[in-house]
Length: 118
Image (tube, helix red, strand yellow):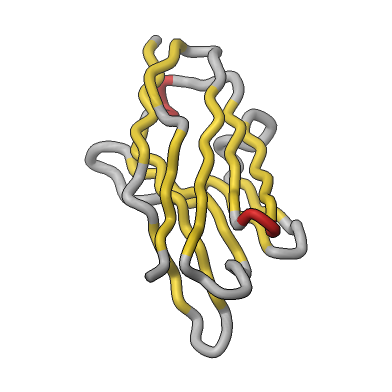
């Protein structure tokens, strides 16, 4: 059974930092792509950042320059370093994993709350 488990969320003041971690298990060969999405109250889930097995990243413009995604293929881990946090970053952050073959499947964690106070 594939599982994605996030950790590292919490409450932080504006301008502060947090580091999210996500561990994937139950997938032979690891994920082809992992990443982070977030959903604020009353809003749709949106992309934050993704990273491929080869290390290519895609980062949303709204967090570019403040958030950094990294991964450890050997450990099936993905991280999100969040600096200079803003109140508008407040959301539930979800870890995602994608396997391309034999059939493309997306997996999701249960989410971790990030709250940034002004």
